[in-house]
Length: 337
Image (cartoon, rainbow, N blue to C red):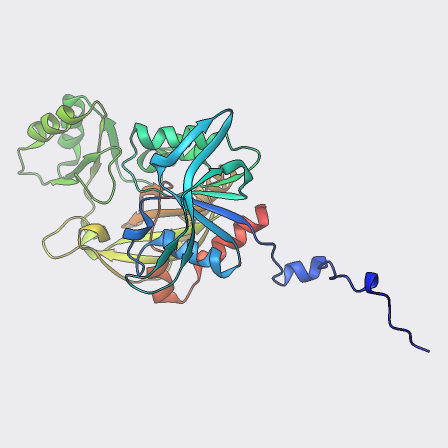
C-alpha cells in the first residue's frame, strides 16, 4: 500500500536551474547611497524606481546618505535605515530606526547620489572600493571615479563633436576661432548648470573664463555648438553595455539646454541606426568596467556625454515605451550575483 512519507521527507524542494531561469529569486540585502529619500519626486526619480523594483522582487532595501558613509576598523559602514516604499505622493517612504550598517554584509550597494562630482563624491568612491569582494557596488566605483561624464567620451574621438578641454584662455580662444559658435561648460558640472552658448558675435569668453577660474581650479570644456539641439537632446539608456531605449529632451523656448532640471520636455523617440552604432562602440567598455546603468546623450548623431554617476530617465522611458528598464537592470545585477 502507499504509505505517507515521514515528516523528514517533506522538506521544501530546492529550485532547479530551470526554475531559477524562470524567475526564482533569493532575497538580497540592498543599500542605496543617495540624496534624502524623503525629498524625491516619485514620478521622475530613477533611484526611487530602482528601489521600488528591488522591493517588488522581495529584496530587503536600506538607505543612507553619503554623509553617513564611514570606514571603521577595516570595514566600510554607514548609518542608515531600512525602508518601505509606495507610490503615494507625500507618503512614499516609511523609514525604520537609524542603524549602524556593516556594508560588507550587503549583497548590493547602489552609488546613486547626484553630482556635483567633487572631492566629497570622489571620496565616497574610494571608500566603496573597499567593499570588494564582499559586496557588488553599482555602478563600479573605481570606474565611476576614473570615467566621469565628459571624460570617458574622449576615448571615442570619432563619435563626439569637436571638443577641447583646457583652463588656458588662449587655448579656448583658439578653439572658438576655428568653430565660431560654441558651448562652454564646467568639466564636472551636471543638470545643465553653468552651460553657456557663445554665438559668433558674443564677446564674453574672457569674462566667462574669469568667472569659472575664480570658482575652482578645474579646466573647462568647450565644444562646437550643434544647432540640431533645438530638436532635442536624446538620452539613450544602456544596461550592461546594451541599448534598451531612449527619450528625447526638447529645450524650452529660448533655452539652449535640454536638461529636464531646467525645463526640458521629455518626449517619445526611437533608436536610430547611428544610436545603435554609438552604443555598439562604447558598450564593451561599459560592460568591462562594471557600468551597469548608463545614460548617454546624443545630439545630431554625436555623442556628447556618457553619464555614469547618477543617470536618469527610467520612469520617462517606461511611460513612453512600456519598457521596464529597472527590471532589466535588476536582471543584470542578479545575474552577476
